Amino acid sequence: MLDNFSGAEFSKQMKVEVHSHTDKYSVCSRIPPRELIAMADASGYDALFLTEHDRVWSKSELAGLQELAERVRVFPGIEVTFPDEVHLLVLGAQDPVYESLKTPGEVFGQACADGFLTIVAHPFRWSHTLPEYCRLADAVEVLTCNQGLDEHAAQARAYARGERMAEIYASDAHGLNFMNKFWLETHEPFETPQEFRRLVMTGRYENHTREFEMALPPLHKVASIGDLAEEDQMALWVQPTL
Image (cartoon, rainbow, N blue to C red):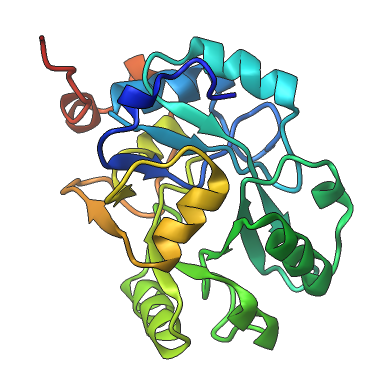
């Protein structure tokens, strides 16, 4: 998937989106895959994890998306939904076996064997408590566009610190207007999901946000870059001239 990129390009920190959805495999998203790649490029992302609900992208599909990208590297992933409505991101998941795993033990076992980062997605959004198995995850989403209450973010941060888990900022993108508001940047480049996990687990990253006026959670989901609000248009990344 990344064979077209030279080693020289992996020479700096990377802006990363760990939580995104497209309208191809997530019915709650309005983002066409092509528009997601274009938005990631325009926003200056270096890496984008596709985390559809209970669905993985095939290698050939990802290769096709990568051909559309000018800057961003596209990585696989999945957002697994458990029966108690806890959602878990597995960053790097591409094997269709992840679509059939049902219990937390099965998912965490497979992710551990594969060396993939696991993140509890938008915790406390629907419940004031988390099941005991959430302690098995590597990280917790603290701020996303789908966590509109300060108390949810405070609970997530307190949980992560209490369990000594990594804290993560992410878009949880279901519309293009969700992106470029919360993200993380690694201190070093990475080429594989396993390397990304090591960077997060050793604290070699920083969370970032920017000022914006959009209500959280967003009132609507934008499907094309041309329909972004002016503040989002003004925040798009401009590649410096050489």
